Length: 417
Image 1 (cartoon, rainbow, N blue to C red):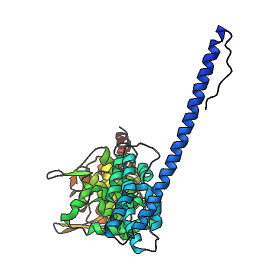
Image 2: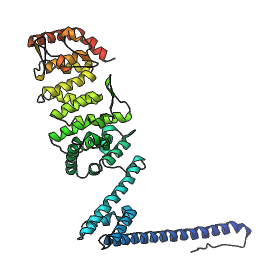
Image 3: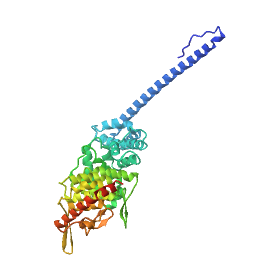
Image 4: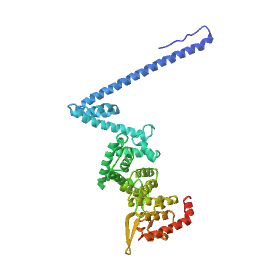
């Protein structure tokens, strides 16, 4: 509709008023046309939406049709419609018709898969910061959100979709699925391992970090074993025939290290022993947090606590020595013995602690009674550090205490450099 402003023509000076009137008429006319177009678009959109929903209703009815070809065509068309069909497909799952329920479930699964794949792609491109996918918030708290963090999570979703999609909505179901999956992987023949990847293992590890996901000690032992699985270890170490395991360094591998270190905090007993040995192999310095907890738990078997000490021997520094010296009176037997020249040597936790302390202090083990010790870089062979009797242990401890009293400042200052 055009609206005219009053115009005076009796004076040449009034030309500006005429121009303003014409402009006013054009603007108001365009505004009216625009509103009409928007209303028409809304009407078309509503009509289109109604038409689609009516089509979906008809297609769902066709899922139970007597003709096989018609049922197949209905399924294909519902898949093409995609996400708009999900609400009605979910309701169709309660249909009295078994055929409708069966086919609706198949279509719903495919539609959700396609819809979720598009969501994964958006997440991967970080198009919308708020468009997170299950597991993102806890994963980024563990490994950060830079570098390959998003890609790693997407790989987990594609590897273990059943577990990953339920992470934040059904923890009890996730616990059951994790238990079943770990058992299945444990039983997978070597020739079929190619169908698995590090993402399968990572997805299971992440699932154990969710609140409400509670696993038995046996299942957690299986989870710990996955951390040493050859497909997972490829992300963290390479194997050299001469040098043994060599750590792989990079943003991605360090993210996997952070995930393993986080899971270590939840392990107990034998599972913790496996986890600590994995931390040693994978060069995970953050494993010291779990190692410290293990040393504080006197109920843990000695053979578990000795692995915690070995982590200190690899990653510890002089500031840890005082803390480790508290173990020098712990006579817990570690189950390790060795007989040399008819002399039986046994290893106690205090022996491992003293050997660790001397290694951190960069002193000579043989000066403190460890005549048989076999060193390998920043570690040692456990059955080569025991003593034949407590008298020998006492002498070794006294020798160390005298050295510590004399050289404490030098040792501690060396650690600060």
